[in-house]
Image 1 (tube, one colour):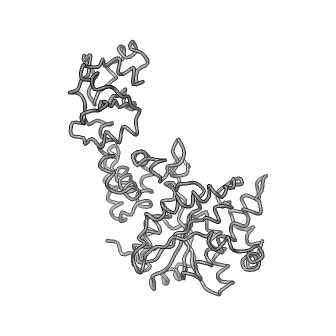
Image 2: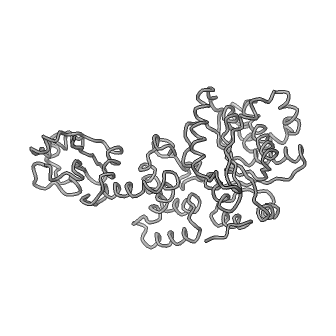
Image 3: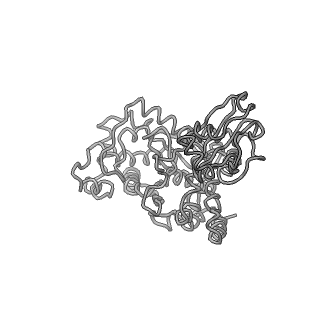
Length: 428
C-alpha cells in the first residue's frame, strides 16, 4: 500500500504525472504533513451531467481524502451563470435560471457519489457558491472583492490575455469570473478553514487570484495545486468521442459505451490515463503496463482502465455483464453467457422482434438478415452469405433458425463482417 499520509500524496501525484502548477512545495508539504487539510475543487454546472474529463479532478479529491484530508466539493450555481473564459475562444451562452438550477441539482448528485461524506474527520461537504454570491450586492462585491484586485494583474492571466488577442475580446461579465472564484476561496477559507484549492491547469490564474485575495483580506497564506488537462495523443480533449462528450450520466452515455470508449483508447493514451484516472496504486499501474507491452494486441491495459473507471462511476456490479456482452460481440458463442448480458446488448444494438410462434416454426435466415438491416436484399445476402454469422457461427448451408438456436431462451445475435451486429429478440 502506497504511503499517502502527509506530504506523501505529493510524491504519489508526481509519480502519476498529476502535478502541473503549485504554490511553494515546501510549505505545501509541511501543511499536508500537519493535516488534515481542508481543500476544495469547483465544478460549474454548464450541462446536466459531468463528463469523463471531470473525473481527473474528482479522482484527485478522492486521493486527498484517502490520504486523510477533507474535501469540499463546490457546485458552481453562481459561477455557472457567468461562464469561465479559461480555455475558450469565444463567449459562452448564458444559461437561463431554470436550466442552471436543474443542472446544479443533477451535477450535485453526481459529485456526491465519489466521496465519503460520513467520516467524522475527512468527511466531504458539498457546497454551492450561489448561497453566498447571490445575496451579495454589487457595491459590497466591488468594495470587498474588487478593491483588492488590480486590473493589471487580471489582464496578465492567461485565460484573459488569450481572449484579448481575439477580435471579439472578452465581456466584463466573463472578466469578472476570476473575482467570483477568488471570493469562493475566501468564503470557504473563512467558513471551513479551507487552505488548498485544486483544479485543472486552466484554473491556475483563478486560483492565484483567490490566494492573493485571502492574503490581502485576512492575512493568511493558503495554497493551490493544478493537474494537467488530459488530452489524447492526437491533441483532442479527453472525454470526447465522435458523437460528443462521454457523460457520467448513464442515461446519456451508458456504462457499456463508456467501457468501449476506454477499451478503444490507444496504447500511448492508456499509458498516461491508467495512473491518472484510476485509484490503482502506481506500482500496480506499472505492472499492468509492463504486461500490456509484452502483448499489446490483447489490450490488457485498456481493459484494466475500463474496468477501474467504469466501476468507480457506475459500481462493480456492471462490469461482469459488460464484459460478457463484449465477449459475445468479439468471439464467444454465448452458450454460458447470462441473460443480463443479452439484455444489456438489447439496449446498445439495433434490435428486431419476432413472434415466438414464428421462431418455433422456423424463420428464414436470409429474410431475417434483410429484416435486420444487415443485408440490403435477399440477393445481396445470398451472394455474400459467407460474411454473415449467427451467434458467432458461420451461417453455412442452413436455411432457417429456430427455438434451439436462441440464446438465453430468446436472443439471436446476427453479425456481418467483424463490426456490424444486430440482436433478434423473441417476444414472450
